[in-house]
Length: 152
Image (cartoon, rainbow, N blue to C red):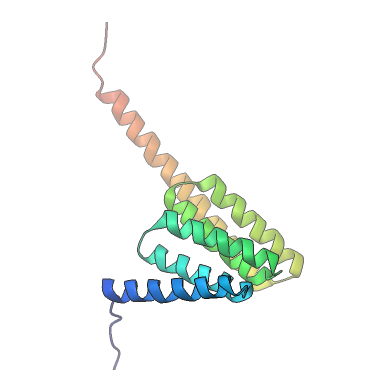
């Protein structure tokens, strides 16, 4: 028997946010940066679930900064991929593509084939989203021009 997945309540999301935030603050205070980078990443993923993209972007950047300091390239690649997703959702396709290209370079430098494949898939998705977005903008622009009255 299979059960349907139940979306977490707002209360549960608030509790999770509070707990992860307090844990991250504790780890930063006591200079446990390798764990704090994961805390920031978890917090950013929570904000993505809530469509709070500006906060998610900031925490991914913080996690990315710490993971680079700790030479944790796996987490850096993961953060870059998630950050690219957030930037794509915001509409910053060029910046999202730059993050993915950096993640691809890191994955290929280490020979991590699975990460490389995941980055390539995400890169294709963002490129397709960019094309779709551009087509929609062109369609709306052509409708606006066609609906304007001719001025003689």
